[in-house]
View 1 (cartoon, rainbow, N blue to C red):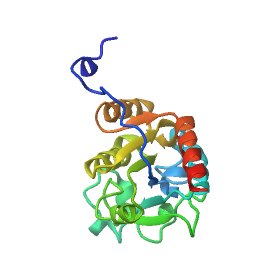
View 2 (view 1 turned 180 degrees about the vertical axis):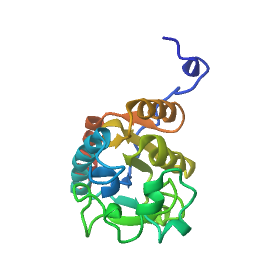
View 3 (view 1 turned 60 degrees about the vertical axis):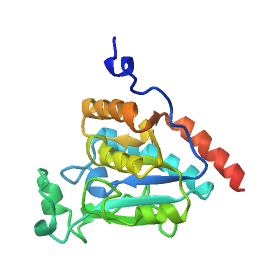
View 4 (view 1 turned 45 degrees about the horizontal axis):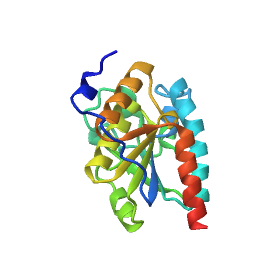
Amino acid sequence: MSDIYKEIGFDANRIGFGERPAIAVVDFQRGFTEPEFPLGGRPMVVNAVENTAKLLEAARRGNVPVATCYTAYTGARDAPYWKIPPVVNDFHHGNASTELDPRIYQPGYDVVYCKTGPSIFFQTAITQFFIKERVDTVIVAGCNTSGCIRASIIDAFSYGYRVIVPEPCVGDVDQGPHDANLTDVGRRYADVTGLDEVLDYLEEIRKRNA
């Protein structure tokens, strides 16, 4: 099948891995990862949580920085005009839906941010943290691919980072938007890879840092 984007020069080269990676984990909070919540427990997201746990285990072994986030508000009044009622009505500070999934969160190691927009970079201190750690490569995991993951990829790209997206570590409500958005960001902003390739890279980092 013809790909007009490639024919006119999109996705012409790989970005590749840099020397100092960090992991950005977006919105793996219980409201998205556990089925008792209205938005939670979607099979693709659950699968991404399990794969991200493997990614993070490898990252922590190599002393790679990990930043994770959740979305929360004081109440409906300070939430943006989301067209998703549970985000506005339930994602409030202290609500169980805003708690990070324990499968991906390691207290005392991970740096945690509360975000109020789609991107993990929007009005948080993550860039300050990455500058301090001299990060040049951001590996993005989390949910949902078509929303907050896409926004985070674009912001990471806009800040000048190499952006890597291990496909098994991101998930969405439906396969179609997941695939379409990964295809599109892969044409423009990021390298979309398998998990094994990223694990091999993190093992190289571990050996170098040992």
